[in-house]
Figure 1 (cartoon, one colour):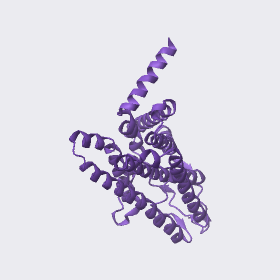
Figure 2 (cartoon, helix red, strand yellow):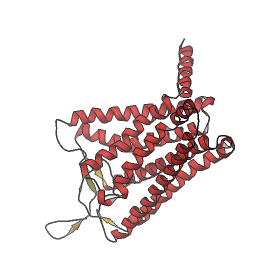
Figure 3 (cartoon, rainbow, N blue to C red):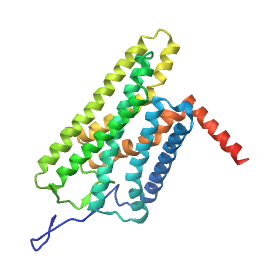
Figure 4 (cartoon, rainbow, N blue to C red):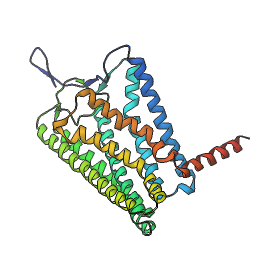
Amino acid sequence: IMENPGGNQTPIVELILIGFGNGPELQPFLFLLFLVIYLAAVAGNLLIVVLVVADRHLHTPMYYFVANLSTVEISYVSTTLPRLIGSLATGDRTISLQNCYVQFHFCVILSTTQGHLLTAMCIDRYLAICHPLRYPALMNGRVCCHMVAWAWIIAISYTIMLEMLSLQLTFCGPKEFNHYFCDFAPTNSFCGESKTLSIGTNYVSIILINMNFLLSLTSYTCILISILRIRSSTGRQKAFSTCSSHLIVVTVNNMCVITNYVVPVFRPSPLLYKILSVFYGNVIPLINPVLYSLRNKEVSQALRTAIQKLAAFRH
């Protein structure tokens, strides 16, 4: 709600997403930049999903998680970037409050699921390297399906809890939202018992994020210890190469999320917060297909086979 000169309160039904400023000289560059990021991220992740589904040699737990992660990342960039690209093209930065709520809840579901899937991949790598003989029994198809299902169940349950808490509050502004998408978590824009919502978002977020971080840290600590015990330098290099890319992505993703949502004393400036959000929300989905899959021999072989089959079909 907003106070008007007459003293009456008018409800806010529309927001203005400030994005990255109003500089006209930057708008064409930002439009092309985010358009390229969006198209490349969708194309790369969609390619991974198609290859994993089509090639039976990729029907393994690792690529099962990679395909699910790619599906989540396609959905995430499709939730945030098209609206930004449209506003950069037309100059219209307005969005209804109802649509803003919808975008926020989808972002929460997808980002939470993404974090749990990355953690599940850490556990998968831990079992593959530290318990290779028991790996087929420990990480079978049923276990993989359960881990992915629980990632979605936890994310959706968390979002429902936020929705129930936010229904008790009223959005009171400001009308100009200093972000490129609707992220209410770091803001204090609600009137009423906002402390309840703050506790619900902050403390539950801290629990979920720290749980994923600690599980990932523990898994990779055990992995590194096991790798260092390998006597052969070739064996150590091969074992480390299977998880180095994932370790980099998990570390960067956790650091960005923790900086933005967990450590309020280090809460970044609005511009830095937006840059970090772009990095873990859009740049990481762009580079994940290359880091996880396209540089692996199995996926490269599957891609060559698919191209050969497509060429043969055309002829």
